[in-house]
Length: 111
Image (tube, rainbow, N blue to C red; front, side, top):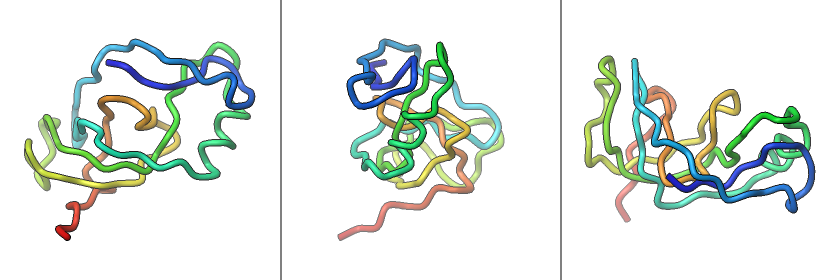
């Protein structure tokens, strides 16, 4: 999958287009195909403080469609439209796919 991330701390010039494997959901994870993301101050703080040599995908506010679920996930199913603010201790959602815990995910409102 394609993702935007960093491998060293710094400003926006450190962002790179990365090619990474699609993650596999386990436990209560949802694999979400990302459709929209937002940028907020947390993204800049993490980008500026990331550990040298660590690949980190930024972005934690997103909306998308559930593609697959971990074995323990019960709140959502494939095809559900969801939105969430993920966890900074996990990879972010500036990517084609992201894993997010179903317990911090909501059904996307219909407009």
